Amino acid sequence: MGRIKSKLIKRTAKQLVNNSPESFKKTFEENKKVLGNLLDSKKTRNQIAGYITNIKKNTKTILEGTQ
Image (cartoon, rainbow, N blue to C red; front, side, top):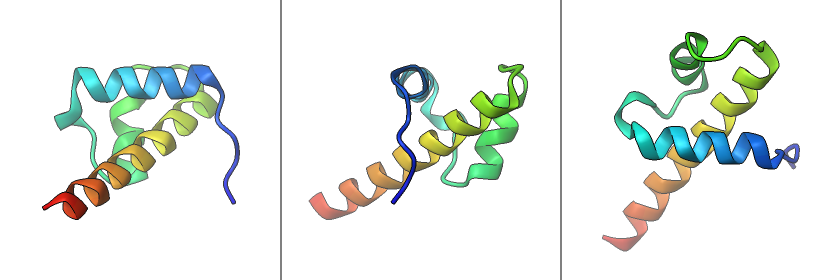
C-alpha cells in the first residue's frame, strides 16, 4: 500500500499533466528530470513526479481497456 498524497501534491500534478501532457512520461526518473527546473524542494519534486507517474500509468491502462 502506498503513502497518502496531500491535496497540494495531487492538485499540482493534475494541473501540470493537463497543461503539458506530452512533456511527462511513464517513468519516475524522466518526470523527476522535467520537474527539476520547476521546483526547488527535492521532497515535493519527488512526490509530484511519483504521482504524475501514477497518473500516466493509470490513464494508459484505462485507455487500453476501452478499445
